[in-house]
Length: 262
Figure: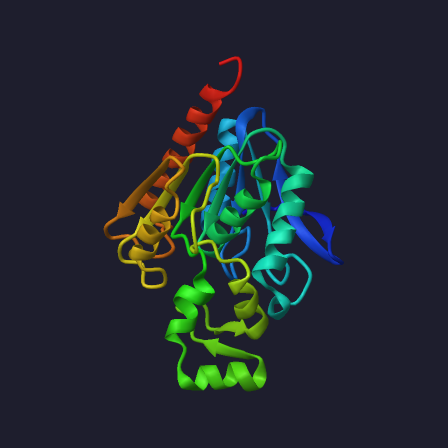
């Protein structure tokens, strides 16, 4: 476990917990976790350990309402978590970076790439794990029961059982409505950098066809899709973690070799 005390960055009045490991090997890596996940998850810690061993910088943070950050989870929206991620990135990331987004974090990563495109600190590469862009509209809303729709209308939120926790997922009206304002699968997505997608074909939460749809919306970028035939949504088995670090390492070497002076 990473026992280091986090740094805290105030973003819109909320203390956001950050773990930043400096490095001297480009590019750095930036972890963006999933819905209700935090920076102490298995994949995040595995990447942090890889970065420590290879000299790459590693930047992780908890969204508001997650992990060690302040704020109420039920106040969270894609826009809010995007703003926090951009603030952390701009404060701590230096030089070329690879954004690594897991599940909802992939949506955040794609939106970050859109917001940063054309700037001096745009990402140099992106790795997406079981990407769930537009999940509120594409995956949650179509599966809502009549009772959940009624709860959303009358109570402002509804619950859905989780396979990963005894506590159910909570989806708020604010999250659903804000999701519609952050859709990326509505046209061409231009990240301006190479993108590598890792997707399990046995993913019960984000069907692998969702990743195929995402590829169709990235016609301008250099995109690689790796399908793991027996992989689930988490892709956290030893062989999945090895695939992840091999993917990040190869992309990092490619980015480093393309830098001026190499």
